[in-house]
Image 1 (cartoon, one colour):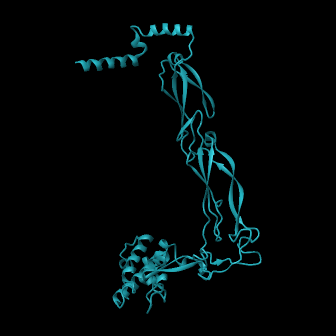
Image 2: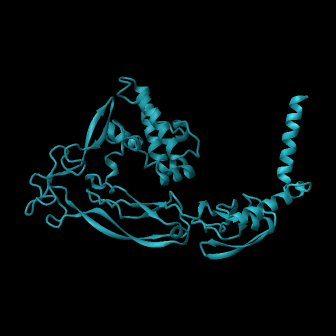
Image 3: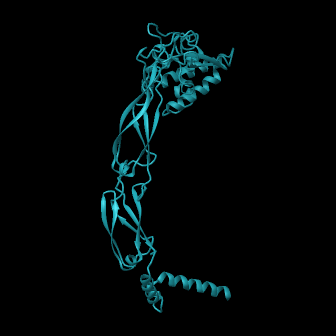
Length: 383
C-alpha cells in the first residue's frame, strides 16, 4: 500500500478531535466496506487504507509518533495492512466497535476479560424543606430513606443458600448478545440475564433472587450556608446499590425553603415591608426593624412617603457559591388609622382644615400636582 498521509486519507486536519476522527472513519468505512462493494478491489483497498489510518490516529501514542516521524514511527504498528482479510481476521463488529460504541453503548472490547457489563446504581433524590434561617446560616440535619442492601441470607448472590447462580445459556456468561442491523451487528444487554451473565434457577426465599433487600438508613446531611430554592446537595455513593457489582449511585438532596412571615428572598437580598403611622411618616422618627441577626434601628426622615425603600447594607444573605453579602431592603407602608374615637376624629378634622387651605400645595405637593393635571385634562377636552 502506498504511504499516503493518514490525515489526507481520512480527509481531516492535523488538529482533528476524537469525535470528528470517528465520524470521518465511519463515513469512509460505510462507503468502501467490502460487504457493500463486492468484487471491487479499489473499494477494498480504500477501506483498508482508512482502517489503517484510523487505527493509528485514534491512539494518542501512535498518533504522536506518526506526527513526529511519519510512517517510520509506526511502521510496525499499523493495523489492517497485512495481506488477506481486515485486521487479522476481525469480524465486522470488531471493525466498527470503536466507531459505533458511543452510539450503541460500546462493543465487546470495552469490557476487560469479555465478562458481563457492570452498571452503576441508580441516583436518588430526597426533597428537603428547610426554614429561611437554616438556609441563610446553614445547618446539619438527619434524613431517613429506604435503600437496598445485600441480602444477609444469600450474601447478595440472589441464589438459595447452598446454590449459586449459573451461566446464562443465552449469552454464555458474557452479558451481551449481538443483533444484526443491516450490514453490521451491534451488541446489547442480554435479555435473559439483563446483562449479568448469570441466571438464578433456585432463588433466595428472602430477597426472591434480587440479591438485595430494602432497609431504612439514616444519613447526616450538612446544609451549607446560603443555599436557596432549587439547590441540590450531592452525597456520593449514597444512592441505590448496583445489582451488577458496580458502584452505588448518588443521592441528591433537593432544597426547598419555606415561606417566611416577615422576609422574602431575592438571590442575596432580603426584602420586608414595614408599616408606619402617618404621624411618624410626616414628622419623622426611629423604628426597630428585624433582621436575621437581630433588631436594628431604622431612621425615618420627615416627609417619608409610602413605598419608600430603605437599604440596610450587608443584612442579607451570603451566597453559597461565593460573592458579597446581600442587603436587607425595607419598604415602608403608611397605615391609615382605624377605629378612631370622637376626640381623635375632631382633632383630625382640625388638622385636615389646616393642611387643605391656601397652603395645601406646600403640605401635599403630589396631590396638588395631580389635581392640577386633572383640571388641565378636562380643560383640554372642552377646548
